Image (tube, rainbow, N blue to C red; front, side):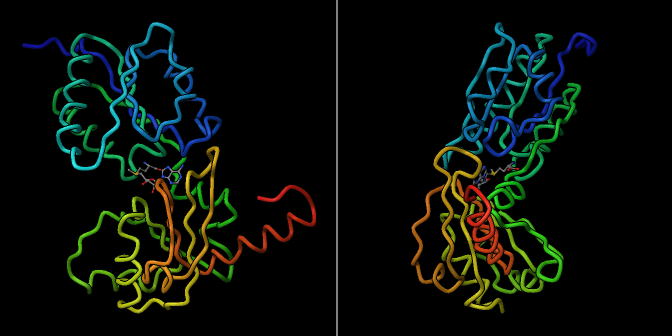
Length: 253
Ligand SMILES: C[S@@+](CC[C@H](N)C(=O)[O-])C[C@H]1O[C@@H](n2cnc3c(N)ncnc32)[C@H](O)[C@@H]1O
């Protein structure tokens, strides 16, 4: 029988969207106490400076096509270190429970009687468009938003109908499938001329924003590099208004 009192603890920590200053105070404090840090591909390496000097830093970034194998290996690492009595930080981009498989790791850890604590992070889905001048809600323009994954289901076309009435749609992991997504949304009833934006490498050096329309994306007329947050809706037009008023007052967005 394993003695649970000797098992280490797992912290599922959100690293925020990229800018290392968008980390919570709690994340900084806990990182400084962990024995092992398992970090993902989209985690800014500058954040690792908050780990204690003796901590073991392990890169566990996944590449397309090896998701399942990598996920199993990551969980084995968590188990191995926790069973040695070590405190493990699982550092994930954005918020660990937003398309980050954090909840799966949480369940698996609980199954193995490993104590878990979640430290939320600033999700790219909201902060990346917002900081680029695209608030997801705005009085009189957008009263609702939905965040979806772009790793989609080429499945039933009627599935897209549920997104027609939503004011603002935010697609994560949607770069590769962007043409299919745009075509599906138009077929479901969204307006072809609806404005869209891709915010690439948001909050990081080299951030770029590409504005377009759903029909241009559907026609393959956009050149986009991941990582990007794909935003669809009238709020996209606010960006040029912000830029215009900032141009008159000070530094541009
Ligand atoms: C696996 S999901 C993880 C999301 C993360 N848990 C969060 O809350 O932000 C990765 C996707 O998030 C988006 N993303 C994350 N960081 C980003 C950034 N700095 N700029 C643009 N998109 C980003 C991209 O759509 C990327 O494909």
